Length: 308
Length: 308
Image 1 (cartoon, helix red, strand yellow):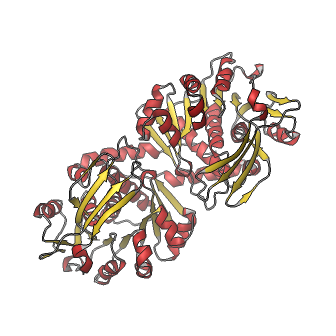
Image 2: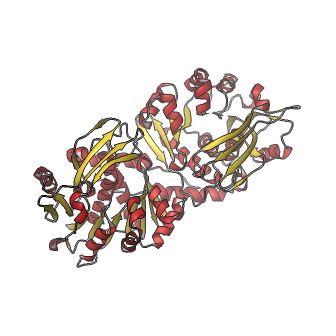
């Protein structure tokens, strides 16, 4: 079984949407990535940090999904990273109400020896220096490195971010971030410029409008599944990345053709994430739900047109 | 050859985009629809009205594309409908600078006898009463009636609009209009409600984010082709409708399966329209460009995933 090394936050979220409000619940990029990747035939490990306030049951949940949590450091007397936010009515935009870095402020990631030869590395959204440190600790060059990041790091750590971008195969960002990073409005031009920065593959996430995969002159598009209800978008991007990397780690094939399938798999996993608050839906999700919905994705986009 | 009857404006547009500005150029929903439909093996006719100021060369252009223009009334001493607008930087929104109804104010459409048995009728964006009048003049029940409309008529002629909606097979509107018409935010719920108003098929146009086709419990999604440059979105929706209806009229197959192809064809035609100002690109377009790009649409969305 291929190893998938994930670095990212394991955290508390408090979320307000037009449909309701939560107290502190389980969140964090690595949590969503790990839960999503656990649906594939891979061996995932999470490198992260939490405080002493972090409930054992959350760690047990990750373990029960076959995720190696030995590199989730528990800081004695420390408090876990906390984010709280409020989504607007359209669920496409949100305000951050509060961010408490807590133990994340001094996070020094340690890649476990058992995973320093992982075939696939997924650098979840974190300070680029942490992402670089993880890459530096790899003993064997990974077959695939996937980077997820956001505008925050473009604003306040652009030089470091560009260093990590140089060293990855795939970058996943949203449309506004692609525009910011490249200075190009057209996503086609933006993706071309970003490829020149390092990654051979650029995935542009457009939320309810789907995701685009760019490679060389080629483009592939995966739609988001139109849903009756979108309840809470938190973690959708991470869940996408977890499905994307999980599928690629499982299939050991990083061709463009197979990366199309990975984008569909990522979209499929993300479509569940948004159906409930936080990780709720990902926790109740069964393999058969996932397969059933994959058929819907196929029906949604496949056509049989005669070309003269 | 099947007949495709088109009712809509033939007009002057003056357009400002971040890339430039035009004087009065050829525009109008029926113009874009007709040019787009003329790429299919159908016999289109336009029912419309222009003023005496309308250049013969524009009429000649439509004729040269095999479009029957005998029902484009020329009002002696009248002035042609004129619209002018300015697009914002993202090209997704625009302000109307001026609308001169002119001869459109008293437009009384007359369906030519030779086309009152048309297999397909496309009701372009106009006052619903004009659309109803066209349907009333049909001597044979059309196999397919496609309605294009907009929020303006929802605001000021909702009762009449609902009358025409009752009588059509397909409605094409954008996402905001679908929400306004149905009172539902979710496009899945919106499309279900709109189907209850009459049309068995609902096409929701999302501009650069593609188009959704809803029928019963089924959904199909056609992406917009990601372009390096979008120059002027004017007429894209009409060009989409013209390709959609033109393909269906040509293929004589109005199954859901074939309607998927029609949505792809509509998206394909619209992707050209936006590349130049006004009708410029549609006029220079060759059949081989169209076929070539259709292959790009296939590459953009087709995947071959193994489902366990």
